[in-house]
Image (tube, rainbow, N blue to C red):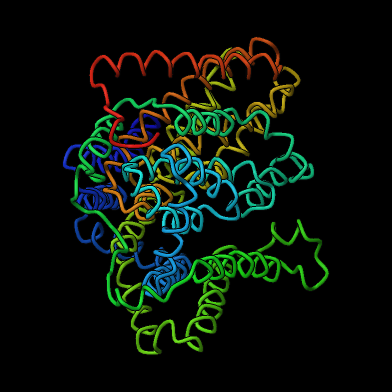
Length: 517
């Protein structure tokens, strides 16, 4: 019965993911997965299936309404800045300064690393700012989406002053009874996936390495100027409108709204965490309401933009308000997929099919050699994150289980490696899952077909995971040692990338004469 429960609990996300990969259509695939899950939950009752599905959907919208408001406000800000000519002015300035394809890719990645406060904010804001620059240098939208995604969660998960760091620290504090932030910081060097992903980004930006579906996307972009390859279901913010007025925009008409958004969001996080009421600065991030803070930050950023534009007549009042309406409309595709992704995650939650706990218990109750524990936790976290589309939920489930596994004298030396594997595996699963919110937002921010982003990123992320898996096995064999396994993992990554690039070059060589690399 336990085995049957486990199989049934993982069936809905497998159905949704399988259909999405086969049909190339996300919304219907998610709906089928949700209905399959609620049918299992209601034990074959069709009426119960429908009422459970849409009741859960309404509940998830209510629980996450601040994220939807934030996305609407951010979409509004994007359209307004675009209409004012701020993005165009920045694109022209950056195009003059960034004269090579390598420079455009590095600048995109660097900006992504700098905006580490929250992954949602990262994906959308960096994509908006850098898209005109990467388009000019014929960087495919799939490659841009990868750069956005790879500098979102992997950076947030090793940044103590972030919504991610604060949440993970609270999980660790509850699970171990130790200082959560101190434990989180100690875990960072053991998060091989985040570290190797950053190295992977540098290699991808500095070299001509392309393989898997990304090679086709890059070849079409470089040789034909086709940035999309596929144009179905692409979300962009090219709303046009007021092309003459766009000439009024200056670089600071983009920079000031973005800076205002960052500063106001940080201040809002401190405010909602009690930082203005005596709570220590770092602790206020741990206590903050991150989604509500994003709403406050984006609203204040919009207010600053209004004050910046209207008195100077960069935009008329009517155009400004029209931009708000247009921006909210632009986020409807993202709203739809996010709501469905949250719903199928709810189907897998403890209140319904209990997917996470069943998978977690299956691994914790099995007898594995001690040295394999970190590597096994890595794979379990990766599978769980992939199935549910949420790294936060995966970490919340597996951190207490990992702490329990490392609670015996035989395994206590593996506590930090197990935590590092949990965080890294969860982020990998989030990266390669079509139903992940950050994956959806990365394709949205890049204006890229969602499944093109998933299929191309899967090859890159999985390459990193394989190297991490080997490094964590070695770590287990060496009793939790850090330095040698990390060096071996990095060396393995570079070797695999070299081999894959040679194989891809023989199969499909790219003519770089059309661009200045």
